[in-house]
Image (cartoon, rainbow over all chains, first blue to last red; front, side, top):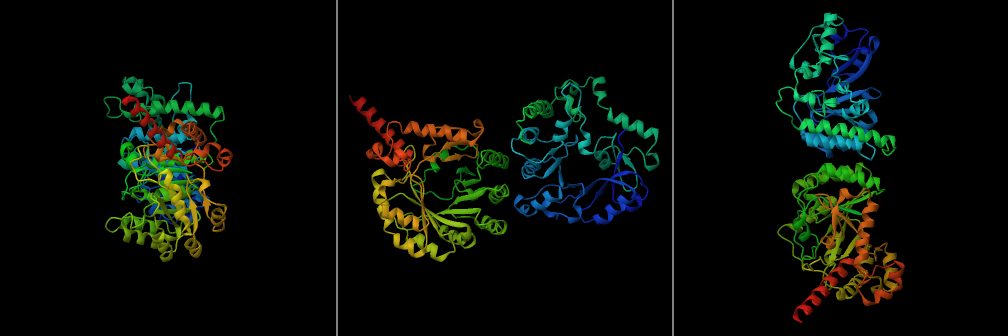
Length: 284
Length: 335
């Protein structure tokens, strides 16, 4: 089994209790990153740094301490492109992945950044529904664009992981939300199965339960929750987009909406992409 | 060079404008979207293009004008912006703030100016132009469209004296639209207009300004001495007439504003710029099938045959075709 990654805040007392674990560290842009990394690496594997701020990207000065580290920079928005141009080289050189919520403007900005060689990650996590048509347009650009550009997640992971044999595709890991691989901790060591659960305060245990059979069962149950849609005969389970979405946007819905078209189209795009790659017609 | 229309809006109503009428009837989208900006940058790069012109309307009216300029620069394009130089205070402040580090080697504003005596500006246009040239002068050259043969360039030379500009004056013949309703330079007035231009040689020389002649000038109207003068000043002349690709905010394409009504297509119908150019070159060839140039002598001209000169602009020929057809139709009706 893949080793569990604990996504936790850079709280020294918490980190002191997690020796030997693989860690993703959530921290603010103002944090002393060099010190945190040094401390973590003494006793842990560092999975990623998740630098989080509600501020726009234009307000964040890329930190030289990020050099050589896997950094996800989660911002509220990008801000005005004109104010960002002086930082593009630094963002590219540092290899930062810019994480964005799913607002309309962020879809545009993800495309701009990607076309300029900056990796982005969109929070397609089953929360607020995006403008599906615009998301579909972006997804097509991300996967079929003929000019080289940086990956846009989770599309890249979905396309890479997608199976064409009719099996469903698990891409939650692209958002660090696969409960079999990731657990999210708060500063008190309480455990949530996803980032959304963490934000909502939906905890399933604490540090003492970390390696318990009960938590393992809980994680497995969440990972396999998609099966319930079949048992309930939910219309999502009969949607052609199911094998990519697995009911991620099923909650509270009484009829299909834009998500069905999006995931169905994506399945088609993924197959087109695979064909283009086989024919070596995608230059990247 | 490809021209991208950022918007169909303009702050002026120039009598010679060959774009306004076309844009007013065609553009469904007010402003080019940033998604399409990325698409266009990809499309041009895939076609090996490294230069792009941003036009309008008045391109600086696009709310994200500076962002678009900076984006194309970040994609390593050379950018030319065709503007009236009449900008709001807010937009001018953005230009000053955000474009400050842009290299004049990679960014050029062609500031199209009108002679205030012959084409009076509205309200505070002169003051706004002055403020623009004060701030954006190092990226700017002047452009002037000739639509009558009694023009003066004194006002332009005065601007060159007052501001630190790129030392090039871009001169264009105002061509007719398909309907010929705009003020344009008729074929029989092109010769006198060029003769008029020669009268300003001393000023060009004294101020060290290179004349840059846009498409459609007929080579036969220039003597060898004129051409030598042009070259010695570092000027350029374009005696050819190739399809200039114009892309509208709603991603339609045509070759040259004046021919916009003749044929247009969706940009998405083409994989590359080469395919698009070939499509519209065929349109130009059809136009010239019966009449190769604007003068009768063009039919047997060696320069036209060699491709050194196109024999004037296709839109002049297209207008003549239209007029001839109308006359023939009237005669037939009368009979």
